[in-house]
Image (spheres, one colour):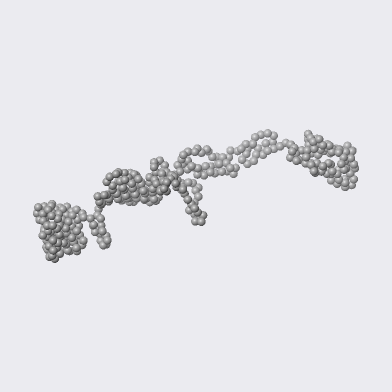
Length: 406
């Protein structure tokens, strides 16, 4: 019986190949002599140097099962295992397939189905005009597992979730920052017509209301036809509704008409946030004919308030102390009281009789301007249907002038 050790290294198909006499085949292996069976794809099938044995007489390859069989001169046969596919061109049988991450159905040993697992929990999002995607969440397999949206996004960055912090970058990190506002709508209030803030072709910011300040602090705004006037500068009073409990004001010009232009200065105290006030009080009206003022106009240049208008005093006033116009429909005597320096009074006598102007106890000097002298008089006489002007040069000194003063 032949004795041998054999290692077969094969890297190609042996279909149709018969192994025949090479060194050691058909001969007796002696001592440590080795052998080589053919040259198979550049690599030999080599028997290691081993014990003596009978020589091989031949060999064959069975392509049906991929084995090589060797025969010897004493009738011994030696067969290899299945050598098909050693160079990647053969075929074989897969015995098991496992399902990896994100797949279901394994293991498959003969036949079966590998399926993609449904690992997403996110429902479909229907796109609408007022729905905006704010964020996406993915699992480890790349499936979308969450979508956050903003409904009716109004342009307020603070209304977004998981927003990055702004304003912390160093100045060197912000360069050449530019927003092109060429006649483009930037923000538009939902449900309010003509409230878009945009720029025109010249770069001017335009809109129905341009507001300065955040709600809750008494904002100032430029408005047009907001219910409180046709063209307005408002203070805590947009749409006639304060955003802050306090005081409110408004400057209005009637730009919506073509005649009698005016400017109104309006004020209101103790207004309530969110409560419509309606039309607030007008305290000054500027128009082509002059200025109308509710209340006094005072001069504080000397440190003391002085009324700089000429108030009207009715016929019942008989003591002369305040500046203004005194209209007399009766000839009762008038007496000077404590007058302030700089006080000017105009007295019109609308009767057919004289009116006596008495110096009184406070005014110690009364002079008649038409007398052209320094005489101190106890009284003066204002003739019928005539006017006199009284000027206080000091708090105890008055001068009476007029067309019919004696």
